[in-house]
Structure formats: C-alpha cells, structure tokens
Image (cartoon, each protein chain N blue to C red):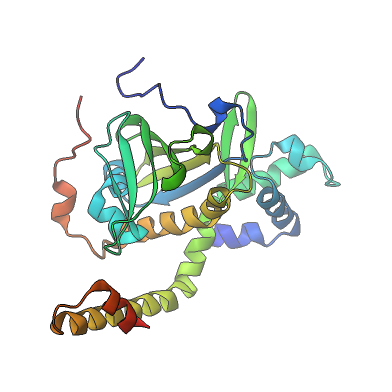
Length: 119
Length: 174
C-alpha cells in the first residue's frame, strides 16, 4: 500500500492517471505529448505507476499500451471507508430478513405485499 | 482450431463498428489460480460477492447468464463462452439481456490468471464496447468493485468453508 501512496504523491504521475482516465490504453508516445518532459522521465513515472499496480500494461504487437488500474485504490477505500459500507449492508440485510420473516408469518403473503412492506 | 475455442461467435469488432478503448484491470489475490478461477465461475461464490450469480456449463459456445441474486431470477447480462483454458484463460461475450442477439452490442471479456508464488495475478480485459454506451460507462465502476469483493472474499474466506474448495471442478474436462 505504501507503493500506492508514494506513486500518487507526485503531480506528474497524477496527471498521467488523469490522462488515462480520459483515454485509456495509451502508448508512451501518446502520454508524453503535451508534457514538458523527456521520454525517459515519463517512462520512469509510468514504471513507478506500474510497480504500484495503478497502471496495467498490455502489449499490442510491439506497442506497450497503458491502462488505468484503480484496484489498489479500492483497497484503500475498503480499508477506511468499506467498514462503514459493510455495516450499512449488514443493516439492510438484517432489515430485509426481518421483513421477510414478518411477511412469511402472515397468511399467504404475496411478493407484492412484501414490496409494500419494505417501503 | 483447438477444441476449447468457439470460433463462430461474432462480437462488435467483427461488425466493423468502432469500439471504445479497452479496460484492463489487474489484481493480485492471495489464493491459488484454481481458487481464483473457481471464484469467477462458481454459482454460489459469484452469488456471494457479485450481487448476481453466473450460470453456465462453461463450455466453448455455451450460453452464460448473469442472474440477480435477489431471487427475482432476472437475467441482466448474458453472452457466450468463446474460449476456455482453465485455470489460465477464459474469453466470453457480454451484453445486456435485451441486446444479446445483436453482434454489434456484444463486448468481450478476457480473464487471464498467472500464478505468482502465493498470489495469483488476475487480469480482466473488457474490450469491444460501444463508445459511451451504458455498458461502457457501467463497467468502469463495476469491475473494480467486483474484483475487490472477490479478493476480500477469497482472502478472508468469510462465507467459505474449506470443503467448497476441494469439490471437483466441473471445468476440468479434457
């Protein structure tokens, strides 16, 4: 996870991710255009992003294409936000269970009635 | 042609329509390739983390359905299995149920699994999407959530018992 934070702690690398978000699957040449930076410097930044798994690469013939990979960010979200989400989902599941138990115990409940009960 | 491929399935690129840029997602999961593979196709496992379960006999050419887990039985997405090489690679077509008979609406998903010591590297590529279509927009948010759920399910094993893993795999048919 520290790789991810280190990779994101640089403005140029965030810019590269923005560019991939806008248009996924770009080559080094595509990504370098418009950046006041050497090809080697951009390649180095991309390598850091790749190592942190924030960029996936896919070879198309001889061309190396770069794709935004937000998965490591989900890990971060899961670590500090997900806990709340899990609690919310658990609460909803319990709620659904209670309602279904309640409507099952009433005589011959139809799905429509269940839906009404949920509102 | 290898027997594990269905070559007669036409997807969007074959119709000559323009395709949106691919999405390529990579995730490392602390589990064997077989466990990850099983997590991607098993009905009960997909149901546990996807909000939908995936149903198919997983043979090249066969249909697969992405069915809501809420008991409604509603099929939201479906397609066909294009290539199977368990537990390394799988290619399948994807479309909304109402559009699944129209080749220009059929996108392609590829799963690639590589064993790396204690981890498995899973790469999911979603290609041949119609630019700006609801599917194109939906998968951008959908896959990261699905894959991180799969990862936490496989790594924490919250809803699993050991026994489920040791069941014979129906995909092992040579």
